[in-house]
Image 1 (cartoon, rainbow, N blue to C red):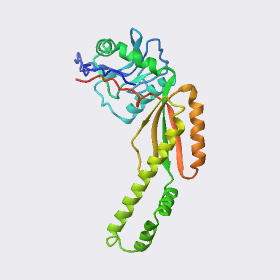
Image 2: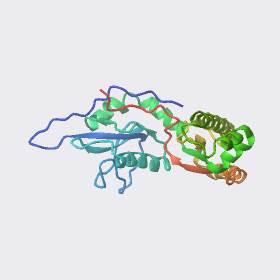
Image 3: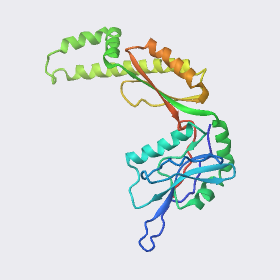
Image 4: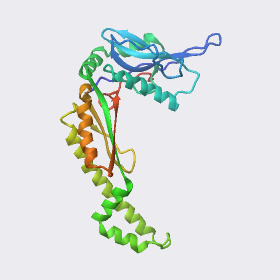
Length: 271
């Protein structure tokens, strides 16, 4: 699934007049035009920042006003951006726009984003109707997976025993060799265990997308797009894997989330 990439939206600059703070319009994502924003929805920039909707035809953009004389990119800003999109995805289809997209004002949202790409965005939103992204994360229990590797590679256990209590400078090459073998073994296990998860959830999912490991002990890092009413089925499938992998892999399911892995994120705010 993809959307045409919106280009040409100008970075907000604004002119300071009479000492007034420069402002721009921050864009979060594209939604159906009939979406209403909750009164308590807050955006990038703090608790006082309210989220609004700019509509054009059958689509709309979630936006808020942004003061440009403040740094953009704090952890709180990123949390606010993703939090709004994820909360939206739990209710309606949404096309997330990359963090940090700012245009000159509401007219630019329509003229440079919504109008030129209306049909592409509408088609993508229709494909996402009733669906949301979930992320499956699995982390090996370190001592358990190391014992597995030592059983499978007895030469490693022998080598570890040989270098035990010896000076580090004497055993440097041996330690490097052990580390490389362990890393290769974990990578092979990750491939096999990720495939097991994919096979378990594929009948439930519309799409799957492999993610790069976020940690050296990651067992699986997988994004899936499912119909939201099948969340229980997904949880049940993962529950069976969790029972099989008890004390070996710690599994977590994150979501519903905006479909970051299943759309070509439209751009805004680019020069």
